[in-house]
Length: 149
Image 1: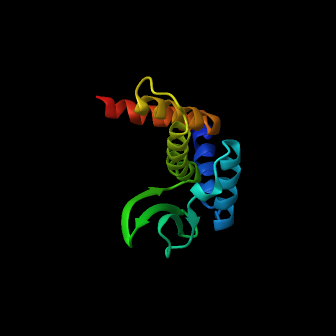
Image 2: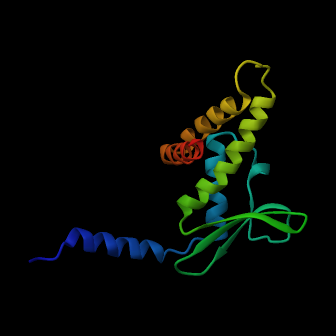
Image 3: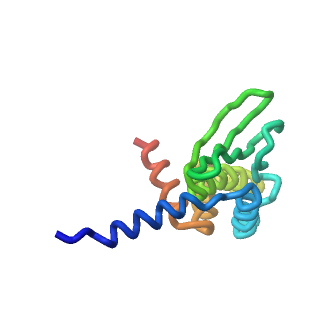
């Protein structure tokens, strides 16, 4: 039986992609480009490689096979952290937070009093995520559906 060269080539390609070193600058550029797509204020983006701040920041660990930590800190206490093993997941975590903040700001400025504020907020956040990526939209929608049950 012959080996499956497609599977082998895919494995080698995935391995080589893991060896690409992502720098702080790469992360910042990616966040800024994505923020521009949805007109997100840069003040909503986390800082990169600065643990001495309040709010959100990103730490990149490792040279090869990197991990990315998105940490939320207030009053010196870590309130939340997410660990991503790839840039796609890191951007999802970042923009899940950014789009939530944007949706709140947009809905607070709305004069609508009909319907459920939370539902309008969720729809607005889903709309913003869809502009960034259908995958982000679908992933967030699945997360919310799991919480509904």
